[in-house]
Image (cartoon, rainbow, N blue to C red):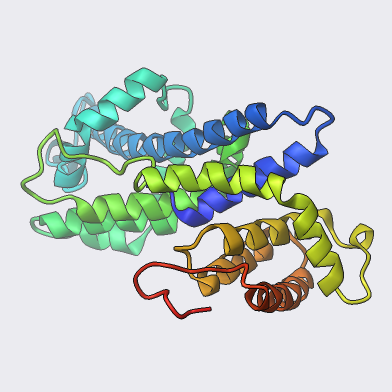
Amino acid sequence: MISRRLLRIKVLQVLYAYYKSDQKDINLSEKELFFSIGKAYELYHFILLLFLEIVDYAEARIDLARNKKVPSFDDLNPNTNFIDNKFIAQLRSNADLKTFAENNKINWVQNPEFVKEVFNLLQTDQDYIDYMELESADYAADKKLFVKICTDIILPNESLCILLEEKSIYWNDDLDFIVSMLVKTIKQFKPSDGEEKKLLELYKNEEDKDYVKMLFRKSIAKRDFCLQLIEEKASNWDLERIAFMDVIIMQLAITELMEFNSIPTKVTLNEYLEITKYYSTEKSNSFINGVLDKIMQQLKTDKKIKKTGRGLIGEV
């Protein structure tokens, strides 16, 4: 499922675009928000399909070698650990993946060179070399290899980042989060799982979907209140002098502190400070931290923060 942090980032991006737009249409922006989240889920499936393409490429290479006019002993007796990967066999037959790929028309047909590039990188990786030297790779080793591919081959791949940017403007900042989803998916597979094994859902539950909608709409509704608080607590700073992205980050944090009673204040503050590291300047983190801390204390004093639920009673 899409993580709460990525959901917050999606709201941040759409909210920024909403305020920068001449035509401020909440319904249209909300539609864009959910479309953007859907595209992240599409990327999750797109990378799963990449796993299959890499194995298919390896198998095609073996077939070509076998069909040489004068094949060598190694050509006729290839190492098949990789193409016989049992996790990939499960993924290839997975009904959820097949249905999503067909319905959304996603595939790697137009990008064979990238598939080749990933395989070539993989061949030089020591973990892959060790895996191929196993007399008989077990299921745990099969899964471990693809976790490795996710974290060490796919995630830091600059060519992939460029390719994803070309394919969709919505994928620019999603890969880190999607790789986490992929690793979780791989680890959840068991040897007994068949074609009906469920992949991760788009949302953890309906509460997450409602959270996105409420955060977006309530942030807009409470904008004036948030701006007033920010201006009061940002000592010696006029709003015009504060980076626009910083203002929106604080606006979202304030809204979440007030409107989502089941989310601990510490979680809210930590999440938006982490987001600040990627979406604002180096100095913004300490500035936003200081302002939000003052605002939170004020909101607590005014009893505008009320937390309920297990482990949260008495927090404020």
